[in-house]
Length: 193
Image 1 (tube, one colour):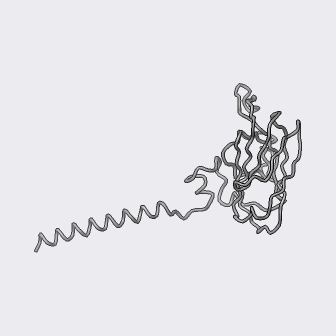
Image 2 (cartoon, one colour):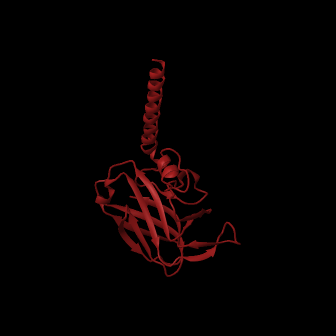
Image 3 (cartoon, one colour):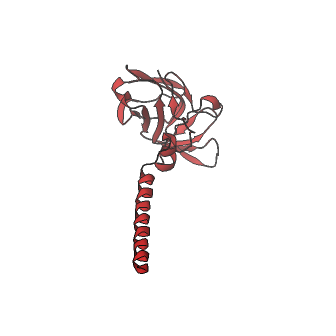
């Protein structure tokens, strides 16, 4: 009788451990955390921690890319961006910015892009949620561009703005003149209106 009890106890412990293992496995694949946490820590889509609700964006708000604009600084920085500078930030060849819209969109909107500079002879393909909405060839110096975004692209509340740049060049980093960086366009601000 005692052997039967010990054997039964071993089976119960073994089954309990197996159930616990599958419970932990399930919980690790179905985590219940904020989107920002998941994008930064789990999926590695963000290169800088935006904070909880840091991806939230209200239409017509200008997102600034320079150090001197701490209150309105763009936070949903994905891959493809160089270090932040005083007035803006250089992109590399494939820069992504993530935004979570606070409002529903039922009409076409405009992406307003203010560039402080650009590498000469380059073309920028602008994609929103993997749909190309336009391309521009920036002029020398500071310029403002307006690109129309069709309303059907706003189906998801999370937007991924992707700037694919042809012909990036190596330039001297303004933060460290001994270092070269791959640069495409110098973004000062972005807004959707």
